Image (cartoon, rainbow over the protein chains, first blue to last red):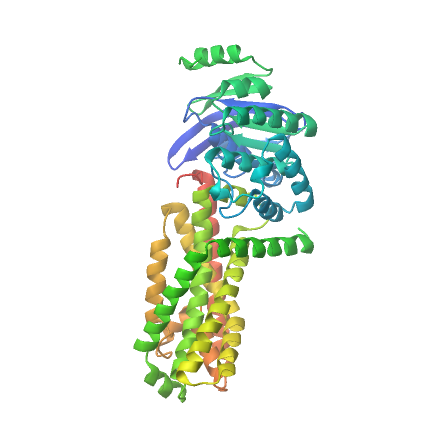
Length: 242
Length: 262
């Protein structure tokens, strides 16, 4: 089972921002895909398309060899996109209450998601956040809470847009453990976009390099941090801070 | 989606919205104060004598109160659907809500029911105070409250439709809340809230015919089938219009937008 993008185009208004993107994403393999590219390359745009939030303006986006029209429905039920930044949950509600709300509107059993969230909170050292109101949290805590809610849905495909932004060093290590454990244990597919070479080398198993709305390279194996930095410098002709 | 899942969604939304509203207590209280000032304004400047003459009664203030209650519950329903989209997009939860199994308008509708329950309690208190001030039996005004609450279920759906029109606007123009407030204030003074149903165009508003039906029922006067037909028809049209335009705006945003440009 997998997702195929074939010459996918996407417009924002009259501006084309993705120009014929093609690649495939195998599902149910426990793979973590890393979307890499400079700001404005099209990573978030791609993630929104894959999660079914937005629709394509050209080309084909489909599940296996099914009709295009099936994809949107499938994506809305089987994927979850978490936007970048410290947003994504309802203010004045705790992560547990947010989880109840989002479980109810996604028609997922609340008891199951709650059990997963409490288990993941232990792993992520975030038990103290479970009953704290979202708007009372720091940026890093908000990010943690949003991630914990998202991961608890156990969706076959999880799309995390710059998940490590705003996290302190120990939380970044916890995030790596969490992503790794979710992918391996559940065999779900995780798509990550990040500018953090450590995260991308530690947990990512395949890479999609994007630049100016096109895919410029795909790599089907893990890269070390040094290899990743070197490849980034070669592909984008930009120096990377070491 | 099963009936059980639908029931769970409604129950969870009710409890979460109540928790949220309680935590935003100061804002909720300030809204109540504002609405009370609006009520005083319509009672003071409203056509009490005109009401008495038009409905052949001496309960002109109660006629205004009925109009005000419809307006109040209607604007709350309208605000809920507009703010649901606007705030959701700003706080980044709209993306997750789009991926839900329920249509966005349905979640907004459930949320507006919850808020309407508080406003019912608020209007009940306002009615009791009014009863003491104008020396009318409290039970008589409670009867008016219950009539409004039941009959306004229909007009709230129409007002939700207007809210969806603004919600569609917020997808395109981002912040439209102020425009919505201006419209709500204008409606208060041109609708048959503080005056009788002098001209037919007032019935084109979602709660216009509802106010007339309730006033007649309260006074024990006959209600024409024509009026009931207008009430249902107008609200179906407003809701359908709101839904069609909102869905179009959503599809357009999904096609050439990104939901994150707030």
